[in-house]
Length: 510
Ligand SMILES: Nc1ncnc2c1ncn2[C@@H]1O[C@H](COP(=O)(O)OP(=O)(O)O)[C@@H](O)[C@H]1O
Ligand SMILES: [Mg+2]
Image 1: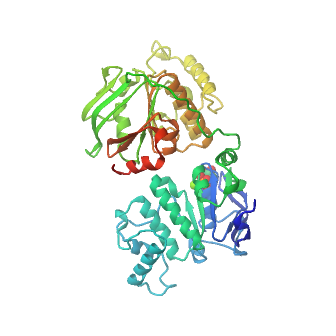
Image 2: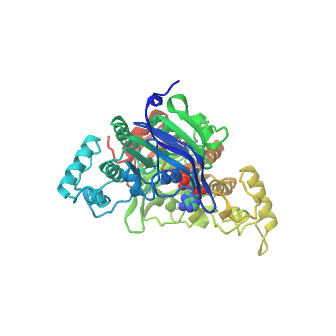
Image 3: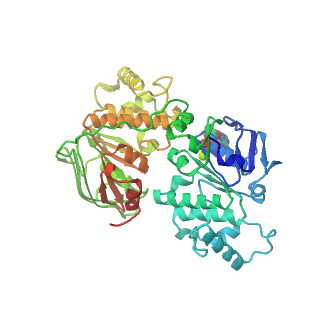
């Protein structure tokens, strides 16, 4: 099948780009082309070299070797200013805006006054307004940055690039910070840009986004381009296999299962104050039955952390009641909770999940260090600790030379598997999992999802907190939407959509 962009002009091209960092070869002979008016995705797992390549294109990094051609001419960018002057714009993962200043001020600030003559605020303001209207960005030129949502701030960054006459726009993981609605709106903007001749490079590690927005995609792995596809000729499985380098099962096989009748865990009218004495959980009620996964969907900062910490005795409960297997556990400490067949996979695996300098064996023992057979007399029983860890390393496919290896030497995915091995092997009745796959690659995600489902099949009551709606939908038997510390809506995942759930996540009402 011939792609429409075959006939279009190549505007940007890299030739054998190599970027060697002191210890990492981040880009290895990368060749990509970008056509006029094209939406191009760069897909790859964490560390594949996507941001590095874009930073080379934008003049932030000097390539170790290789060339950049713009409209067929070799160019050398010594700084982003050179790239901007030749029509490139980039929106970084972290925005570079100054909070107290207005949109227009922020946009002028970055520009060179000399080139456009003295900067006339009124003129700039008018131009900002025009661009905003042209691309339906809905940005008020006079709004102070700090009053804008993350999604709008991102559009200010886009506007800034357009104000500087960008013909090529690079967006580095732009959807990571957005709600589903905002993603849709951003994609509309990107399509409008393409239709008026701007070429867009969008970086993502999400397959559905590649399929939804791009005309063509390059897949990067280990610093190299391992594939190129027209999106009309590929699908998510093909892309995932290229991205990971082996066959990946994308859809978790989840059979219907009848949950038990009597809840294992019940939360009634819970109120939890955060560290600023603000009610982060404010009248939340919920129950979790054996053999079901209840998914808490919500935008970050709506009480997820406080809910998890209150359940685990890490944050005190202001009012309300938590019951586990008929007992009131509202004010129990963490240690006591761990002793009651409650398991916890925390979202911050470095703060709560692992003690990094300790060995894998010791991390697997954590919390049980005063129990037999981990301890014998007053001494830790290392023989048992290590042989038990070896069994789990095998069972959970943790990639490590041995169990003496400190946790800090493992990759994120393997660290997460250590926590999972510890928490799941303790035969919990209730399992709290918070963001279990954050920052992990597709392969590790697949594995962890399977393990969580296996616990459900063994009748564990599971509460899943995740900011990834994909994950909530893939695993949950019931979805509860958390907004401003309360459950505002319940859904059957089979009878709803991302959009509908997203609507309630952002404060939408019936
Ligand atoms: N400034 C840097 N110095 C040293 N290593 C870096 C630097 N930036 C990135 N890397 C390394 O280069 C590799 C590619 O990183 P990056 O381009 O950020 O990947 P991606 O954006 O695909 O997640 C990673 O191993 C990363 O640790
Ligand atoms: Mg990156």
